[in-house]
Amino acid sequence: GPKVLQIPSHQIIDMGQMVTLNCDPVSNHLYFYWYKQILGQQMEFLVNFYNGKVMEKSKLFKDQFSVERPDGSYFTLKIQPTALEDSAVYFCASSRTGGNSDYTFGSGTRLLVI
Amino acid sequence: GDSVTQTEGQVALSEEDFLTIHCNYSASGYPALFWYVQYPGEGPQFLFRASRDKEKGSSRGFEATYDKGTTSFHLRKASVQESDSAVYYCALGPMNYNQGKLIFGQGTKLSIKP
Image (tube, rainbow over all chains, first blue to last red; front, side):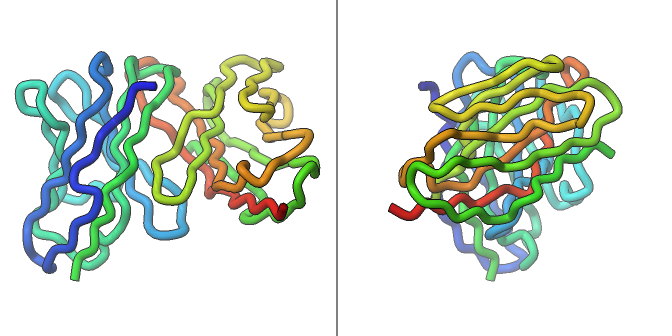
């Protein structure tokens, strides 16, 4: 079936540096999401994005986080500056609608901040 | 706020055993309910959903029935296989169009012994 691609699959970065996580969503999907999963824990919603705007963000979506999708290219999550507690797996997802359609998830980017 | 509770953190079974994973939700409205499965190193994969009271969702031999009275959506499978070993997540879908996010339970790790 259709896939969400995430690049890179792994990233190691020094604390305080900037990192950009890239997501190529399913082609006809209009809604985009980022989730955070710390090892062995549940998936936590960070943010959703539609029509060029953030629709909703959680308390985990700190001021250091930002998202964008310039000109229909990658949907990106930028963290600047990074902190040790940002180490986690970040999953991108997309859906055709904002209602109860199927959400397609990528395989995640494993971010390690050292 | 809205939430999902999965009672079992881990379940260990033998092949051909009957599986039940309990899921209860708390929501102010009438949400859709989902089951996702996550294999190691991958993102969650959509299993099935149900949107109305008494509706049954099913896929790959797994099934769950939406029960508004008991606010439950328990996952069941009559005869598990080793390949079913994974983490299973119950999730709550958006109640409003364009609200667009899934709220996940804590996940249940299913281990099947051959």
